Length: 286
Image 1: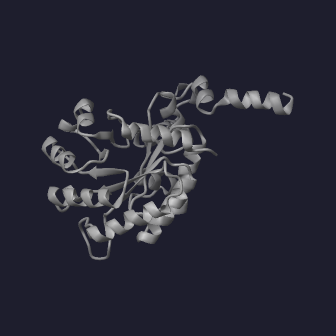
Image 2: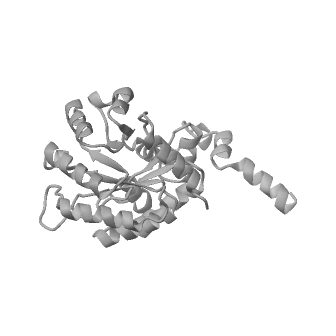
Image 3: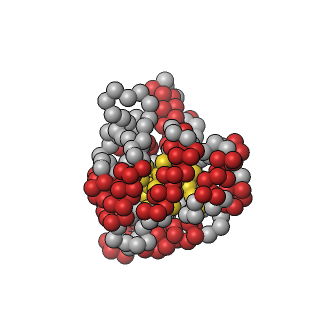
């Protein structure tokens, strides 16, 4: 498949002046819904991938091939530009390079690589970071693995909540110098923190889990924030809906009286029933 158009649109968003909230997606139908509703981009998180593919918590037990496979299923279902959280690149710098190769092939438009020491090392109870030097090596390896120059690679750090603002800025500046296309900061809580980060860096910014004073899209856009994640509630909502529906059926509710069930028209829309009906007529003589 051809991924260039969606990657060009993703790049244009980063180069613009607006900040947008991505639609948190996890499978082909959720991505189609986000696209139909007008979201500019989709976001596929590592935590959501672990739950979707394995039914497991976010402990980095998911493999690269499993993650890339689900990303490809999402991408082939529509044309929504997809940003993904590639965690730590599934290993060292060489693994990070391989991660970029696989996710580029799967059609993602942007991916972030983080400098958290993952999976959790033996004997540790709190998150910790790899060194800036190792983080820079990972970023350079990731960039070296990229074949399509329109693919966007973002350097990600949670340093602000682990080692503090100064270290977060130092890491952002180091990854910027390494050549990444954007900087992804997780854990920013105040406008003062964001103002300091924006003043010290030049690249487009991505924020994870914005809340409180960081919800004004106009303010965020003026600080070069181009993507602001709101969390991944759609997957949690889907889990709740399935749980409630199965429980109601188990408790004896007749299927015809179940609340919150998608209509036949909506199901036809999200499964692209009209396309398949046309193809059936054109190719099967139906």
